[in-house]
Each structure stands twice: as C-alpha cells, then as structure tokens.
Length: 332
Image (cartoon, rainbow, N blue to C red):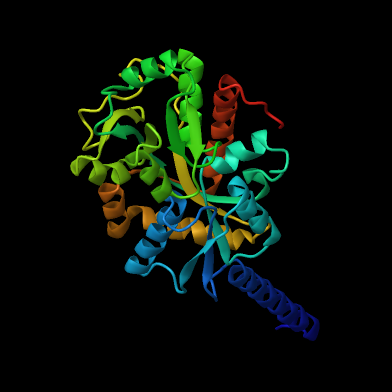
C-alpha cells in the first residue's frame, strides 16, 4: 500500500518526465525552419550575365518541382567586382530569407583587393551545385584556327590582340593570365559588365578572342559566327568532342574551374542551413535540374554545407597559386 509521501514522489516523477518530454518537443519545434516570406536570391551581375542566368535557372527548377513553399526572386546587386553583393550579404546577418549565388570571383576578389574585406568563410556556405566548363572561341573568319595560332600571333605583336571578358578577377582573365605566364605571350583584356556586350565586341571585330560557356557558344558555332579552339576543362564536353582541352592543345597550365553554388549571410540559424541543404539536395536530383544541366552542358557537383566549406578552402589555395603565377599581388 502506497503512503502519501510515496504518492507525492510518484506524481513528481511523472511531472518531471512530462516536463522533459515537452522540452524535447519544444527543442524539435525550434530546430525546424520553413521560410515564411519570399526568398531573395542575390547575384552580383546584371541581367543576362552568367551569374544572373544561373540564379534564374535555379529558381525556375525549384518552382517547376514545387520544392519551396514561398517564391524566390532575383536581386541584382551589381558593382565593385562582386563587392557590392558581398557587402549586402554581410549586412543581412542572421536573415534566413536571403541567399546568394557565388562564383570563383567571391574567392579571388578578397585575395587581391584591399577593399574587398569579406571572405566567403565570413558568411554561411550552403551548397556547391555545379562545375562549369569553358570554351575559348574566336570569330569564324579569324586567321587563328587553333589556340597555338592565337598565342603565336600574340607573341609576334605583344598587346595588339584583345580578349573580351568580365571582371579582371573572373575565370576568363585568370585563364588569360595563366596562359601568358606559361607562354610569354601578351594580349589585352577588355572588361564588359554584361555577357551580351562581350559577345558583341567579338562578333564586331573589336576583340579577337573570349572565353564562353559551352551552352552560350553552341548557338554561335552552329550559326557559323564563332569557332572553338580549346576547352577550359579537364575532359572534353559532350558536343565539343572535336575541340581539344588546354592540355591537349599543348598548354599544361593550372586549371581554373568555375564553380557556382549558394551562400547565406553570416549567423543564420542552424535550422535554416539544414533547410537549404535539403532544398538543394532535392534540386540536384530533380528531373528539372538534370534537364538544365544537360541542355547547358554543365557538370552537376552538389555538395552539402560542410563539404562546400572544405571545397572553398581548397579552391582558395588553388586560386592563390594561379594568381601568384599570373603576377598578381596578394593582399591577404
């Protein structure tokens, strides 16, 4: 037979057990995150440039697959070679309704620009999504039939030939710098803010060469306007089987991969990181995304947050080598 004291102990034990259970339930609830308003997707380039096009493709696939409960909308934060977008992301610390598309520019810029004081590790890397091949092209009526022809021409007339591109810290100029360092050839780099302007400069005869995305170059090649002379990749891309890689063309230079992925502001909740990891993991295996990869000749390369952080660390070390070989002065 239970005494009153024993009954009190039993009641207290049950109360404590219930409290623990409620606490655990509360912790589970707090660990969940679901966006409650539109998600802002920041890109550092203007409409039509590669970063903008990629961001819109991500959003289109997510909407087609109905993977997010709210709308996602592009925010073009242009200026400072990506610094404007990075500074904006830093100003949104703790906000889980803002993410951004990153490229190699977000890593290289802080290494050489004193004013670009924020590095990617200051923010919250979410996911790497793709590795993007590149194609070096000339006009179809160019006297240069191979990359060697172009390099030889640049050697004979230092500074006379021109290449169109974007930021001086983006992949197209880094490829130029590595080739110049390896060959001793010299040619000018003309920077344009938008992809359309870069192509127009090439087709109009104002520049002699440019580095393009394979999908971007495809239509121009089919229409007989440009000719591909080399691929900036470790292996030949489908549809470009006849075009040699840089190494196959005789130029064994460091690779400058173009990786794209998503990053969030600093200090967002761990639950938000988990939400976005799950979102982009689902996106990476979806039919809509696989079609985008195939149509645009991209290499799917999904990594979760932890692995993306490790990749970015290795990538920064690689870019340091490339920038030093190119003669750049590192400030960090």
